[in-house]
Image (cartoon, rainbow, N blue to C red):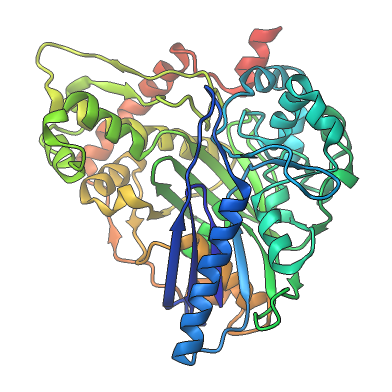
Amino acid sequence: MVGIDVGTTSAKAVVFDVDGTPLARAEQGYPLRAPAPGHAVQDPETVVDAVLDVTRRVLDTARHDGTPVAGLALSGAMHTLIALDEDDRPLTPLVTWADARAVAQAARLRAERPGLHARTGTPLHPMSPLVKLVWFSEHEPEVCARAARWCGVKELVLRRLTGTWATDHSTASGTGLLDLQALAWDPEALAVAGVTADQLCPLVSPTAVLEAREPSWPPVVAGAADGPLANLGVGAIAPGVAACSIGTSGALRLVAGQPGIDEQGRTFCYALTPGRWVVGGAVNNGGVVLRWAGDALAPDLGPDAHDALLRLAAQAPPGSDGLLMVPALLGERAPSWDAEARGAFVGLTIAHRREHLLRAAVEGVCLQLGLVLDALRDAGHDIREIRATGGALRSPVWRQILCDVLGLPLRVPAGRDGSALGAALLGFAALGAGAPLEDAVAALPAGDPLEPDPAAAAIYAAIRPRFAALHEALGARTPAESRDSQH
């Protein structure tokens, strides 16, 4: 099975054996442009062409090696949006999740329409396509008047591969336009966005199988969104097991049997497969915080000094001798969903050195994910183990600090293609190949457990309430608090 992962900055295609072993891999990057402040967009043709290129390359490799390929299965970046005219020509660039121009619209909707988050599972944040649509209606009405269709990057890829317009339930659940209980476009959300169901793609199951346009290519499984699929790819679908990733940004997610968010609106809820829902929170500020700290505090170490920065950070003790960093350098998503949040160092004394500031930066990212963990527990979810992935967590320093902050055993599965593997496993299940999905996921190697250091875990447990209070004092508020302030 070829798992195709359409990411924010690159497309990758990986051929997996039925047991999840990667056999061939291809990846191609593409730029993320910022033509104006707050904008984060891409050229749609560049992205789709990259997807087709990596897919063709791994299929050619598989044929050369004599490896039969049963199908192609898709994973796609969430929260993207593009307008197309009646001839399917782009009217806008591809607007990514990182686009932050709709800050005012998000704040207004959080105050006026809080029920939308609860019903659709998607926070009212500038990342949301619903909020982006409101921005377009207010700032580019001529585009809205000409738009025959609104969709995202995964729909563009699926259309190019199969000739069919379709949105899988998982991707749709990240738009802010889908009623999670009904798995249908939500009438109130459509009205707020100023679009009709006919302007969106027909909804299909993530396990829907479509015929490829290329006669020599295997069938295409619609697949799901990249975040939910990452839980499949790291084996985090059993009760009590959560997936945590730290790359440029970060996330903490678990699989639940029913849709729903916590009462304070701190979490998201997205569909995965029938009967499985992914609940959790994403943070804007992950490994990018350490990169910023390196540039600002240790430029003498050079631009490729990731390991040296972490060795320096490891010289400071857990808790950084009382220094805290709120790492909201790029605004924030979970649990406050405050795009205007700002970062800060607090507690500086004359005794602190740059190793303390560097460690506080890493600790701040992990403490932010700890607030997501608290929100999930407050919503009634029992979490006993973390499966961790992402470029940052290849570092033993990052891993141990995260393990200590969360106070839970941490396993790091081998491999770096979680979403692509999740797509492939879903593809095998959709085509009836191999073991049932739950058995296939359970059989994935989990990695050896890393245990929290009791003394460090106690320090971080004592810090976390102070960190949460500081976050709120600096202006990052929960959606409920934001609504209260509006009234």
